[in-house]
Image (cartoon, rainbow, N blue to C red):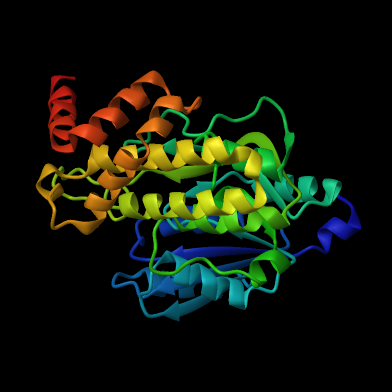
Length: 333
């Protein structure tokens, strides 16, 4: 590796909240990176288990590790504190129950410096609680590809792109001027879509170097049919934000943005508990009104599938009936 590359410092930020069972695997995978010039920032977000003490233990064992503690405020606030403390030229993120391959940051940094890029991305896979590899959420490219910001935005709007900052290495100067939105879920998508206009292109590597641990009990995963994770309201709000952003920066993607807004509302309607589908639920009423208002867009949008259109039209006419019918179909399967 060239001397200039060796001098580049990468800050890896790990927000931690009650993951003492998984934290050693996560941190060890970062410490074992083939690229050694790392600053590993562990941010204990008010854990009530031994995660904070374990973070301090790692800091004593490895001088590259720094442990910080704060009151519980969510992953975004922990990440923001990590960014504030980071002194690296590039910044990466690893969730405390996930883990990475040893070559991940060496590969990402080489790509970033070779092409003089502000952001590079590896591919990822997902592992369930039994250790089984799950179906790919994002299909890795066959070889490294350089994607301009507008094309990257299009992939996100078509639900083919990876919005996670955990798979990315980002120029620190870019993140120092921005923050993850606190008190929200789906925060990676929101920040990434806001940043894209400042990033001429992103390189995507084919190697699945980042391993997502699919753990029930996280913000977006639940086994209880009566629970309704807040992420389903946040994805609708973010769809509205990105639609406005697209009109300003990428007007050629207007149809894709409208498809995205409709699809996110379909996701909301397919998951909301039937008990919450009532006139007292203001957000639900707003979603229903949006679907009614945009029936023409539902019929005409070229990027919605036939099945998408059928569901959306049914929800725009008889939402409670459509939700009950969907629930019955799920039981039959």
